[in-house]
Length: 100
Image 1 (cartoon, rainbow, N blue to C red):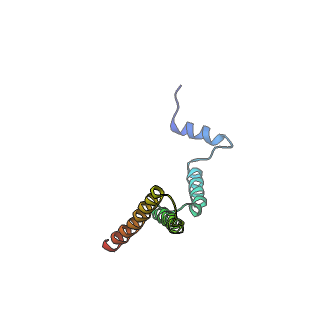
Image 2: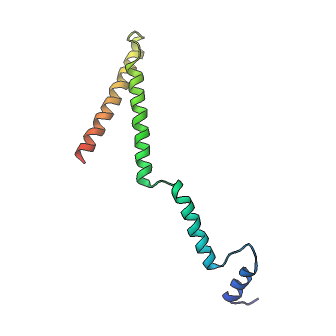
Image 3: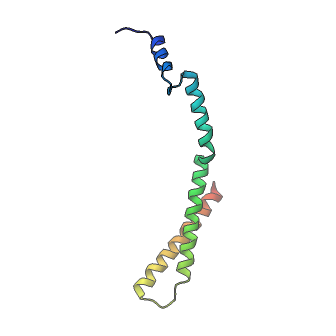
């Protein structure tokens, strides 16, 4: 069973659903162009994730600030610790961005 690469390429080209080498590159380029608008870059993804995280933190801060002042001592302590932790994380983020 011998055969050259040219014979193999010729057999591939004989099949109607299979493209040749040049057509494969064209098909790949076309597919990449079609996918590109729906993809975001790594930088865009990082910014999106940071924005989502900031939004979540701000929402939680608002929730904690709006809690009624009268609740159980244990629950109030937990809420205050979380509130201070979130504020500290926000301050640390600002300091890091100012430093860099």
